[in-house]
Length: 58
Image (tube, rainbow, N blue to C red):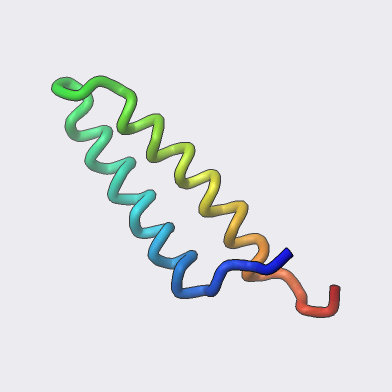
């Protein structure tokens, strides 16, 4: 399976941090769904970052 380019993983990490921050800041108006989506997005980003940091020998 091909891995994501490093610049895309960095963009995903920035997006997840923004989603968590805005989701937590606006939780009284929008509820906890945006915050939860930011957490899920961060988990996806960490899984993608694992592939970027892995060896290329495999």
